[in-house]
Length: 612
Image (cartoon, rainbow, N blue to C red; front, side):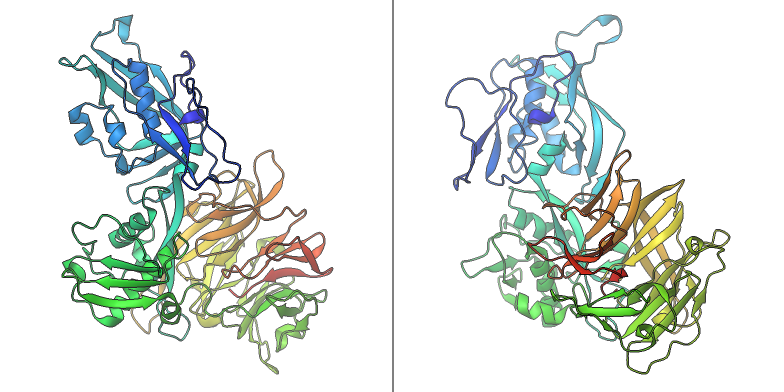
């Protein structure tokens, strides 16, 4: 809580019950600590100071009720693995019943505390009640899944004086923990765990497709072991219906295993219980791949995983290099080209990782300009393209090979104006084409299997507004939609579900739409920019246009936002972070290579996209 907590409008700031020390490896610029005097108003540590740790202090003898409440709240923000110190502020019964892992509530400025006066002003000398209040920002549930939240937080803690010791302790409190946003940023980090798409395959291959499932874990409480346990527990509820795990149901770490640490060769040994002891080699390799992908961004790094059966026997050993050949993660193949429309509304391209500016027309009719286009999409295998006519009325699909013709439109909108017609299209990993028709008389989200045939109307249960933009994730099971309602545009993330017998037209739905940018009300452009990350251009109420990264769960990822750029109309990013961010702005087509500033590609052009 530290500086996050106000301490109540009618109370002086309480003495902090936690202290901050620098880690064994001292960072350059780490603030020195006073060697004497009281600690008052301890400020929350900025998230980038990863070596700074907070240790909770137990209650002092004869602590007042206010000190007990304040000390308990401070202890919730410490690095105590099992909240042992926090439980010292509770009665024995309350300590047994309290479940801190049930949820984490994040408040804008931490909880304010105030004594609740009983009716008539009479107070029991052996009992006290405090109200905890604040403005909610987010919650993290028991599955470690993050959700933005708003509204007022109000809970009560009850204190009683122990009849034997005469010490005040908390005997009634809400489940879970509560803290301010800066303490949350210091204590928790977002990490992707990985499962496999259950209803898609990567184009014509049979490789399973890795799907990121972001969760929050405590930053300095053995996060590697936390992540493996979370992975074994299964996907979060939102993603669960469209993914599968190769770990047999009930798989857990072997009894007695409390921590996992890679050896000096970056090999991690994971002892499993009896549930996993009979898996075959192919399935074991998939299990190891899930762990490798889940732990790949953590420190220390893990390059190889050995899974062990309950009796200690080796099930398999698998390396990250092997995992990349077993599972598709991100783009089907690394995009070779960046595509956009030139000043003649033809589809042109340049090598995706190039710093050059020479463009070439794509092979086939899309590059010949026979049909002037307003937007374009290229399939993930870069063999097919789709373009919406300049007036937004017609959708064309063609092969990107020399001599290929365009033919008749595969879809036509009846909207009266370009703004009431077709959005830019988007290809999924299976080679199906998505587009929204904004016709006010018949607004629809549509899917064309393999970019052809009769369009399938996608069920968008719960959609509140009109779709203005569509982008399907590389995993094929999540979709990003810009939705307009009452003049405001929000970014919504939905789960794609397919059903139906083989050989029959599938029933396709986008379910459980949720906002990824609750604080923005005017989304101008967006694109997927990672396994669970998007880049958005938008504006908050009363604010100016900004460009930033957001997570699919609505949280803000660590790291800097893209360098500011004015007048952005469209944005393009790849799930491959080696490729530069590209935008269509008032300066034309520009790109942002890693570690550089925005660079002009061409002065005249529009609609930049990477495959997808």
